[in-house]
Image (cartoon, rainbow, N blue to C red; front, side, top):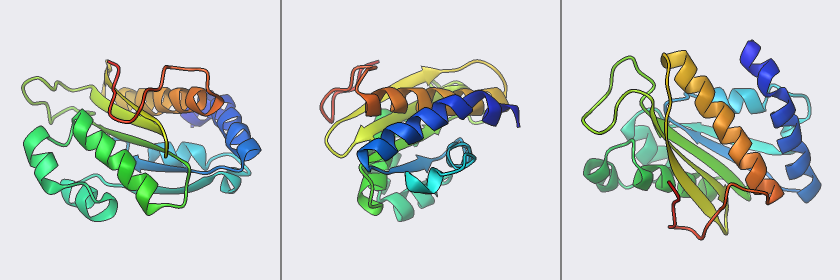
Amino acid sequence: MELLRDLEPTVLALGDALRARGQHLAAAESCTGGLLAAVCTSVAGSSDWFERGFVSYSNEAKVQLLGVDAALIARHGAVSEEVVRAMHAGALRQAPVQWAVAVTGIAGPGGAVPGKPVGTVWLAWGSVARSEARRLQLPGDRTAVREATVAVALQWLLQAVRGDGPAIGAIGGARR
């Protein structure tokens, strides 16, 4: 798979950074459907730093697996900053990890709603102490959106673990 080859250096660097700290990662995924976890676990030695993945594709799964409040989903929609932050927090609560990444979005070709076209993705990443959430608007078809989401998530997570950006603010403060 070309995606695995392309992202291998980032995944290896992320693994090295987590391993050096004795820390672990969990992933909470919706629109990527486990692709992020698959990329992480594609490299030898990932069991040293990748703890688990939650594929919470449906709203019900977000509630059951990650403890996302159903009222939050009803109020803001599954593709929102509020829900991705709740997914991130849920992954940190449900797994014995110091770091988590969460993703929810509209990969297409359907699913667009007013204000949320195909390619709208929300990412949240960070540690138990500090997190960040950002909205992406990605071009391309379903595969391109999913692959770009994984690439961006891994890069931003690597930067956060290393402490070299993008800026991570206190929990609750998203930069867009």
